[in-house]
Image (cartoon, rainbow, N blue to C red; front, side, top):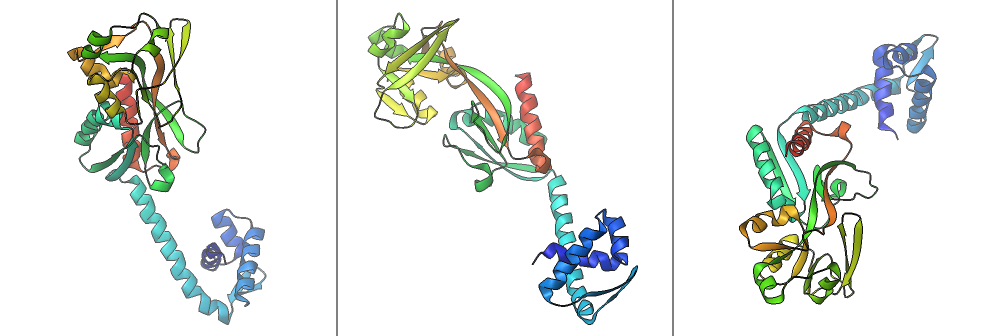
Length: 295
């Protein structure tokens, strides 16, 4: 049974007939007549007696109309409440992001956003595991691309180079590689899921690209841990600049093969259909995009 037909039945009665309801709703009279017939078939009883342009409620129709009218009002009330909730700027935004962006520039940007909008709260989940926005109830996520095909919308936020770095202590003990191919003679640290095989780095200098195959001395899927192990002298790692910028400036890390770099790390904001986005989420999305443009 289609409950929408209950609402249509009330709209036909309230409008004064099929023709008037058709004009008011912008729905063909034949469609309304078919839906009404289906409703009557569902109940096994005639609800309206059609008399030319007029109609008359049957006994069953008189019994059914109050119940259908109550349902129609409840549907209208729910729609109004939902619309009001979508338009309100206040409330909670549930967001997901990888650990390192969340602990660096994203955290600072969100603090600025919350200062501008004290009526909004943000729940930020940091994990390098990709979350399913729709299934897990997230409004927005920051992801590192390239993006694969998805039912979600993605907007490019910013990008940064990946560079080779190691600690001063490690380089003092082992020296610097003179070329990309010498990297396999050093302790290399890999970011990614656990695997027993070899890893690959693709690094580039101008138009030259080198494919470096190596067996990592340490592999981890948490960038914060990768940074800590590298800083502690564990080896050479390929890390996004924004992750290690402070340690480079402090002299804790040094760049290895400074003319070579890895693929760009591109950050995207991903979210469901924008037309259905609550006002508070739209505010945050637009704020982050404008913030990235100014940086």
